[in-house]
Image (cartoon, rainbow, N blue to C red; front, side, top):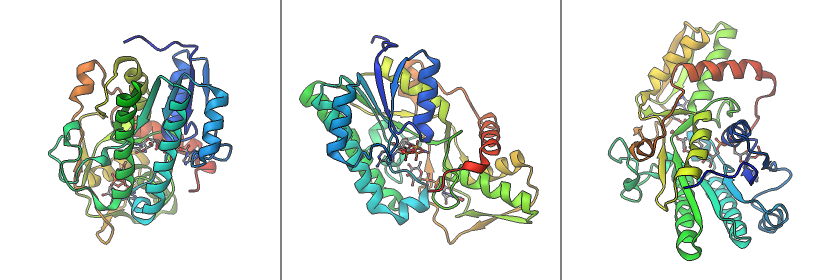
Length: 317
Ligand SMILES: NC(=O)C1=CN([C@@H]2O[C@H](COP(=O)(O)OP(=O)(O)OC[C@H]3O[C@@H](n4cnc5c(N)ncnc54)[C@H](OP(=O)(O)O)[C@@H]3O)[C@@H](O)[C@H]2O)C=CC1
Ligand SMILES: C[C@H]1O[C@H](OP(=O)(O)OP(=O)(O)OC[C@H]2O[C@@H](n3cnc4c(=O)[nH]c(N)nc43)[C@H](O)[C@@H]2O)[C@@H](O)[C@@H](O)C1=O
């Protein structure tokens, strides 16, 4: 496959989010000169008419869909209607509008929660649709599975060179540190940091602490997005991860060490565990020549540094 033209117009939907902002940084560093984006207040991607106008008026060569209703286990479990409907609308509007102006290259981002709750580990792409989903994020997962199918359908019916990628759990600068609605890593980083400042003797960790998760530093995902657009042209979705995981308890210990909190870590087993394990098989991606560069604890240290520098204007949703 050919490398992307550095003067191509690239629309990064969701460019203010964790993933979209990392993609913007990476593409800028790689010499792309015509990146475009719009915040949700400028362009609500659920508004089909406005999405069609925006895409027609801006005429991008490439569309990267990093816009979505996103959240951790609590948000997914509490707002399933929003996670299903918003995501179906956002991705459908973007893909239909991109198709209407013959956009040749599009990257859709899903999530590792598309795979069955008890999929064999590490999870291969072929596990898709082979078993029941994790109930806490079923609505979101169904929307993301529909996104994979939409990419495949556009490839088949219109010959589009569109692709989808399924990242594992992500973290890094620009993450959502909301106390309830965020993912585990930013949530615990903040809670442990605040416990240290308050001189608290303990910090509560949701669930049993035994679930295992794989964490990819978001700048690595941004690298993978460019790599895939330049090296991958297949309807089958492709996993993006690091190939290693740890328990939530061990994550909390690592975060406490990073923050310098010496109190106790207490499990609240009234909170849900979610999927017991979600480690991606990344052999298809590594066979193409890509691998993650930022591991623990370096990525955690970088994220904590970002958190400390941005503590006064963290996201509020
Ligand atoms: N975070 C993670 O652990 C993982 C994320 N992913 C995937 O990566 C993608 C990006 O996620 P992430 O960056 O974490 O999420 P964020 O919440 O950080 O960012 C999502 C972005 O989507 C935009 N957005 C949401 N709703 C709308 C809307 N109605 N109209 C316009 N824009 C909207 C927001 O724009 P604005 O800021 O302007 O409001 C925001 O910038 C998603 O597809 C997600 O599924 C996959 C695996 C794991
Ligand atoms: C990326 C992925 O993210 C979500 O799935 P998840 O991996 O289960 O996400 P999570 O990060 O919220 O939790 C991971 C684990 O950690 C535990 N946990 C402990 N303490 C806190 C805590 O304070 N906050 C949170 N959120 N979790 C905590 C929590 O109980 C669980 O066992 C999706 O819904 C889905 O949308 C998706 O794609």
